[in-house]
Amino acid sequence: MGAAAVTDLKRLGKRGSYRLGRLRAQGIIDAPPPSPFRPSFTRSYHQGRTSLWLLALLAGAAAIWGGAIIGLWAAPFIVGLLAGLANWYGGFRARIMVFAAVFMAAVGWGIPLAWPALHHQPVWATSRTIAALLGLPAHALAGIGLTLLIGAVQAVVGLWLGRALTPRPSHQL
Image (tube, rainbow, N blue to C red; front, side, top):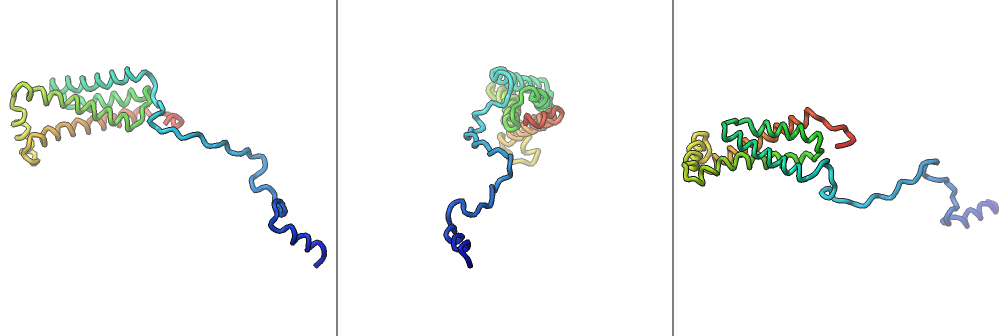
């Protein structure tokens, strides 16, 4: 054990004494610092004016309302399909579009169901009878709720089909 071994013992635990080299690969630049957190609701993912999209939302509800008045039961599906196709341009997230489709269906079917009740027509009795015939509890809200649920499901399925027909590039998802 010579003098070299003694000097090695003196270097133990000292900074830079082991010279193992750099642990990272040569030529790779350090990663930039992480970007600050921004909640997803503060980011704007869509294109166009928001007021135009709100107007389209109300127009979709009015189209479903008109379809309900003339007896077009598939109006929520058609409006949902058109909303899904229009979303190719707008670029809204799926959860926002599902909310919009359900809102359009609920308002579009809710107004024609509530309007006759405000004019003292037997909407509640008819809805109660329909609910009982379907095997649901014989309550008016069960029949009206089922009607609104069917409209919402139609709108969401139409939205899904419209979005599936117009896929966005993967870098824009």
